[in-house]
Length: 421
Ligand code: W6P
Image (cartoon, rainbow, N blue to C red; front, side, top):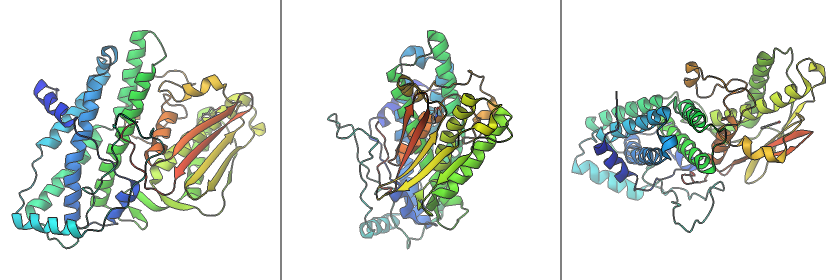
């Protein structure tokens, strides 16, 4: 069993002094579909520096939580995973490089095309006077090294690095559910169901960071392993068809709804989409968000009218609009709405209309498969996914009538990663 010792923690605190470097979607696709071994090596070097820094920030924050929360067994478990992953990365030896090779890398970097400028992510509060906001660099992330021949030690380094980060990603699969367990432990301990604003903000930061780390690892691994599909760069689809994804999410959400309530037909979802809209995005993120919103709308409608009134359900409307900056998906239901006082609660990591349930161990495994009513993390996490690439998610409700959810997606795709929120 791994344990976080004081010596390692000193190292972690040192790494946590360095700023995290963000990478935009636009920068990630610069790699093209099949990067050369040397380009891979360069990306590995970047991640080999960047990931320990990001992990260290997380360990430090977990360690500095109020004791009543930080001492919960599940939180300690998560902290140990982060510390172990940190240790594995800093102990992975970099390859021996001849000075000759080093020089050719330096030359190639000089001639490399410059990265597109990133723009501030609208989800981050801007121009903080604390100076805690670090714009992206990314130059260390991507360089085009088509013509450099890699030596065997470099190739074997690249290979063991990818294996190491894939292993880390797998280790962290159960982080969300384990943290949720920790929050439940905390609530029982404190005998309250409210979590305060600090904890809420911590969790937003924590899960946002997790999305970023997993995106970088997932991207690196997908680029290394393939399969190399048309219009895909790693997990990014350069021509994501929003209508197709919406249709898919509609079918899945309705199926889950029918299954959960024992319905013959879930409420209808009417889609309004002007033609085929294609843009650069991560299809799995988009699917996750739309699916999550639809589940909430379906649940509201079914629970308002009751499972015996299948023929009377008012349809849910899904409208897709595209402008120069944004693609927006609006999902409108007539599920009775929420009072204005209930809206902030929806974004906390405790909101669920379903009864608190024991988390099944199985649930840990698949990140993107949620039951009809999970443990209330669907909406806040979906908002983080939206914000991660410069979009946002908003709810406007009419109590007594229904709710509109607006999912904004930034189509310019050059937003900074929101590392500080
Ligand atoms: C509701 C509550 C809710 C949350 C998110 C999306 C849609 C809806 N509808 O009644």
